[in-house]
Image (cartoon, rainbow, N blue to C red; front, side, top):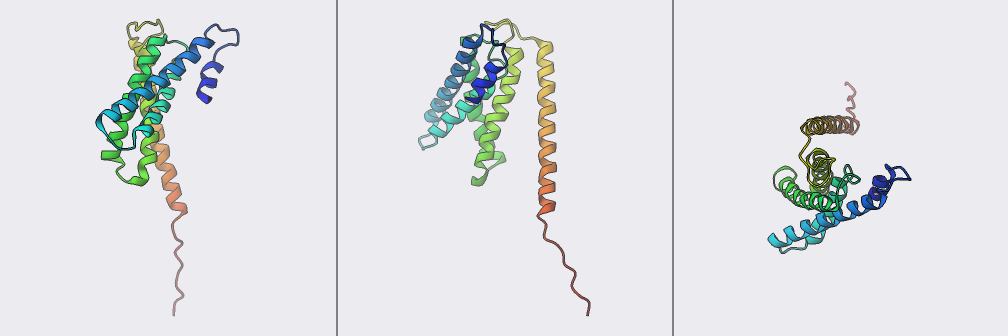
Length: 181
């Protein structure tokens, strides 16, 4: 509901794009959820299908946020479908190689949803074009989006490391000097 409110809240009240924006958000999230669920179900038989479907849903919501008012319904479905597949691929990669411990599962899911979906949504601003109907990508806008992605990634990683260092410094046991004899 927050994404629906944010996507339509950016438009003027008198805009005639409110309905199409809501439709695009729902179509993208639904396509992302369905493809993430089906892709995982095709390769796995365990109980992780629902989790992947819900993660795909959230990834589709994150991906469509930047472009919901610019897309046609077919573009929203395509954007969501790609976001669902990217979510599963990134989640699997993170679990296998970067965050292999069971207590890191939530972190992997959040990075797959917001990292993968956010990067794909940012790139789709220029790749799908503001013209609609899968127009030619705007290369200038693509460069701007790539710069924004790089700055956001560096900022996030640096800030997370600073927070981790401060957290570790705060929880260091105090060294008590022993009395001299």
